[in-house]
Every structure is written in C-alpha cells, then in structure tokens.
Amino acid sequence: MLVLTERGSDREGKRRRIAALLVVLGGLIGSWGVGGVLASDPIGYGVPVWPFADTADRAENALLTSVVPAVRGNLPVNQAGVQVLRRTTAYGSAFWTLKLEVDGETRCREVAVGLTVSSRRVECS
Image (cartoon, rainbow, N blue to C red; front, side, top):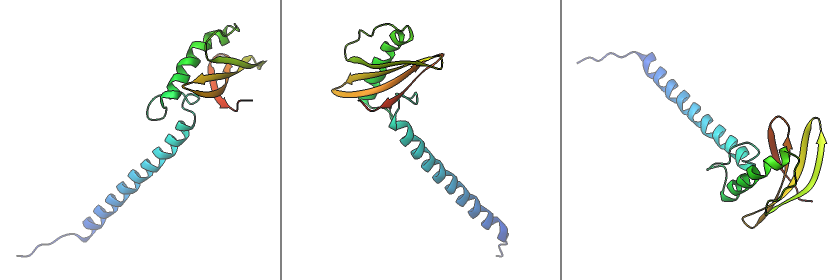
C-alpha cells in the first residue's frame, strides 16, 4: 500500500497551531495587564464589580453614589462616614476631596463633577 501526502499541509497545520497558541497567550497576558490596572482603582475606572473590586470597593462605590447628588448640587454632605476635606471649582467643574470610612478602612477620593462625574483615589492629607 502506498500513501502519498503533501509536505506543505503538515507544515501549514503546525504554523496555524503555533499562531493560535501565540494569540491565546497574548490574550491572556493582555487580560492580566488590563485586569491589574482595573483592580488598582475599580471605582475610578467604572468597574466596581467582581473580580476587580472587593467588598470594600463596592461599599465605597455605594457610599460615593449616595454622596454625588450633594456634590452635584453643592449642598452639605450629611452622610455618615463621609467628611469633606476640600472643595474647589475650576474649568466649569466642582472638585471635592472626600474622606470615606468604608468597612473599617479610611479612603480618600477626589470627585470631579461637571457634565459627568469622575473620581480618583488620592492620599488622605
């Protein structure tokens, strides 16, 4: 019995498998990198969900959500666990630095309220 095969087809299959492996590996490394960045400040990046945010992050997001209407209306904040450290107005936006007591932790955020609301973690000082 004589079996004939094309030499190029086997090489092409190996190339495809190697290319697929590299794509999967690149996707995993990219996902790990993006996940690390999102986990550094899940509230600031708008993803306060598992696996990026822990329970303290979700509690901080809920507290921040309840404070935003007061910040937007430039009203006093009468929320337990929230202290206003600074208020500034610039470029048509209000910038408030808030000290939040969340799950036994002290966290500070600078909240910018203009057309949209954004925030970032800052050092408590």
